Amino acid sequence: MSQLPKQPAEGPVPTSADVARLAGVSRATVSYVLNNNTAVRISDPTRRRVREAAAELGYVPHAAARSLRAGHSRMVLLPTANLPSAPLHRRFLHGLESGLRHLDYTVVQYGSLGLDPDDAARAWAELRPVAVIVPGSVPLAPQGIAVLRRSGAKAVITLGPQPVPGAHALIADQREVGGSAVRHLLERGRRRIGVVMPAEPGLALFAGPRLVGARCAAGGEALIEELPLRYTEESAAALAARWRTLRLDAVFAYDDSYAMLLMRALQDAGIEVPAQTAVIGADDSLPARLLRPRLSSVRMELATVEPLAGLVDRLVRNPGAEPERHDLLRARTVHRESS
Image 1 (cartoon, rainbow, N blue to C red):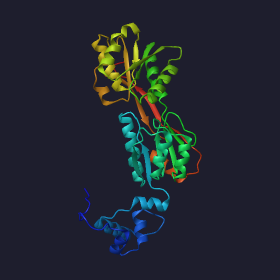
Image 2: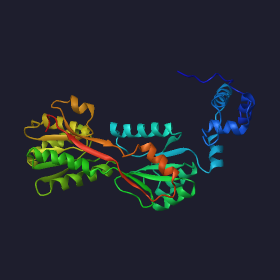
Image 3: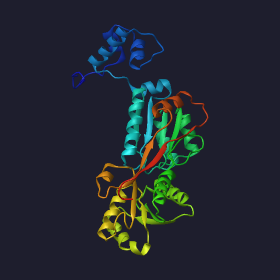
Image 4: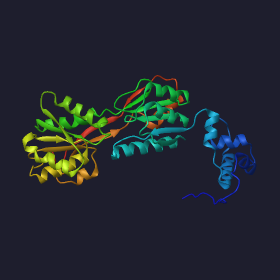
């Protein structure tokens, strides 16, 4: 494991001139090497000497100054949002960040909760990012896109169920999640299907389209009953207590967590799963496989035809390109014992 060299706790901040002096090169050469500029031919020994001198002195380039000279940074800004805490989204964000880092970008998450669309866009623009990837639960208006572009952002990309005019769009159409679950239940003869709708704030952006997808998949073949549910044992027990009056033979829960919560409440109320009621969740989480009966679930993947980091890099390098739309979400049902 590499370690930073020990540096004095106090003293003058090292500069690129200090690095140049120690390495025996010009300040321009230091800038080319440490900024990974490949347009200028510099020998490998010289590059190595510059990096070793910078490490010895504890010098790092000044990001703000570099951004000022270029008019933008190598920063990709990701405003924070009410995204589900599912492994799917964690894997997506980890893959995006590691891929962009490999391409010499820095991904910065920015707290935007509580800001209105115009204030949020101005706050992001102050950091002079080269690209902004805006989750669907964070508001963005066309005026905000214009502010970001004037500040030097080469690419403004939205990530959500609907595109925003003027921005590139990564579409995660949640309707397919509900559709996949209901088609699975229809194939197993279920015709009275409940759809759990979380009462928790921030999840309607995802739950609403899943309900729409469930209704579309059912068509005229099955009844779809909307079931509001808070993520508490008390709320699940109250729903289970009136289950027999609902006369439902299946339920699609918003995700595996809600499915497990409701399934345990149904079992406690004497409702047999899947004999009396089939249960299916979404996310295909590990606990779903450990539960008894094992939980059927909709497995989701977020992927583009080209690697996502490469897509962002291409959009940055072509700032005048027409807005592109890329569908991200792939969904398929994994059948287990609960359905």
